[in-house]
Image (cartoon, rainbow, N blue to C red; front, side, top):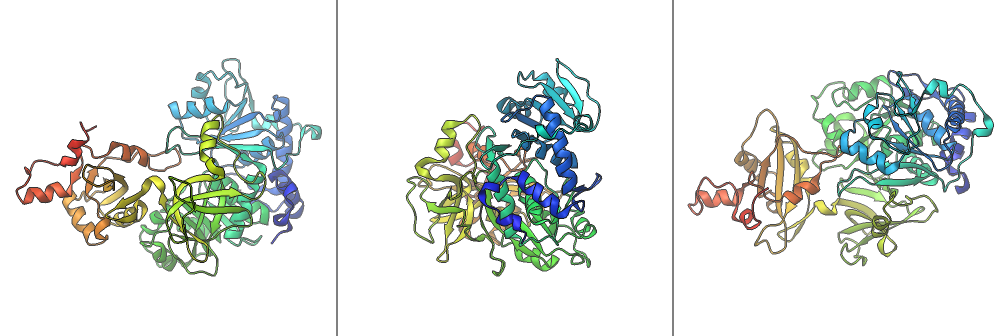
Amino acid sequence: MAAILEAEHARWTLVDALRVQAERFGERPAFIFEGDSDLSLSRLDRESDACAAGLARLGVSPGDRVAIMAENSAAFLIVFWAVQKRRAILVPINSELKGDLLAHQLRDSLPKVIVADRDIGEVVALGLESLEAVIVTKSAFASANGLRSVSLDELCNEPQAELVLSPTPEDICLILYTSGTSGRSKGVLIPEAHAYLFGLLQSRALTLTSDDRFFVALPLFHVNALLMSLGACLLVGAQAYVVSKFSASRWVQQIRECSATVTNCLGIMAEFVLRQPASGTDRNHNLRAVMAVPVSAQWGSAFEARFGVRLVQIYGMTECNIVSFSDPGDPLEPGCIGPLADEFFEVGIIDPDTDRPVPNGAVGEIAVRPKVASAFMQGYLGLPEVTVHAWRNLWFHTGDAGWLDASSRLHFVDRIGDFIRRRGENISSFEIEAVLATHPGIAECAVVGVRVEGAGGEDEIKAVVVRADARPTHAELLEWAVLRLPRYAVPRFWEFVDALEKTPTGKIKKKELRNQGVTARAWDRETQQKSRNGSVGSGSLVSQAASAKGPAK
């Protein structure tokens, strides 16, 4: 493993790592972008130096914020390292954001400069008092409202070494916005050491070496692509092949064409790949490992067998880094993440109501605290009360349910809010969703726990379904689910919707679904069963429990 990985904490910055690795690997292509020029570490170091000088001439000083709205490209990385070399802070903005969601993140972060590869008239119209200049990476942009406009090429054409600074591990280098599943998206303050550790732990989880090639299909505004995937490649000298977006139908072909040996699949990506028609060439590739989060028993082993790869599980968050990952010698056990990264973190399983520790084997909330200075988020931007609440009783509360086994391996269960208690059983909504997703008539689904009168403080299960072309009925789905799910895990309520609302990073907004409870559109299997027995009129699709909640929304 490269010596850079064992650097002392005082050198835990991505700028220092780039300088060391640029000397080692020179002009060898490091980051290869589909449809864009290759980027060697030497070129990245050289051009980010020049870009940092240009940022200085625009007035960017240490602590200032530079927003970027751009697709995956070499320019994105050049700007990221240039911002660090001014000891400033990059604010990656989801390139698809618009309207109120876009306005919130910009008004919250108040950038001095914005970098864009598209027209940003909507941004200009916000009238941000903090915004002084626009840097354009592709096409011309007419300045407006007194803003200075400059192309990235123009900005980087005059190197000045005295304007290039060296950050410290404590410097905030990024503000990354969370999905906002529990309200407005929050800006997570990422220091250099935290950013560095993402790459170090990802490289260990995938046992990366300089001989590997990483296929990256996630956006660079996401921690997974920018810090985990590309950060790991930087630290070991592996190559990365970066595409603009994920395509399930092209996944195997792209893996094969770029000779990838490792890749990351987030959320449902691996399941989408597995749903593609099987081919005799599915194992015709160099891929050896896929980091997939989360892995379900319904498809994990099938994925490994079909594609001839090893699935690697990890547990981590933007706020707290990677705190657990699979042991390469262990067989796949869906939900069992693996040993704790206890060199860097203390991990506890606590009662979410009292914060008291629970015994091994018992499910509780996963709580984390760091052992290394600055290798953890430094709070939520402008939200001191939210930060303190997340850190109550000296633990960072992840909001995730899990448990530790006798070997101190971490097992992930679900988000606390998605953790359903029914009929004396602890139920993972993720596991029910994984089963339902195998039905050919279900295009997408979300499972939540809802409270109804007479349930004794426990949950009832509601499945919200987007149907595929087959368009099964409620009763048909119920009959199918009864054959495949434990009795206690079969949803009572079923609701068809045209689409599931998602956050900017593609997560289903489950809090809203839980808050809706049992709506007038919900089909209640218990009401239907009573109806067939003559207890309730056959036209009623809403249970008496729903009526007890008041008017349906």
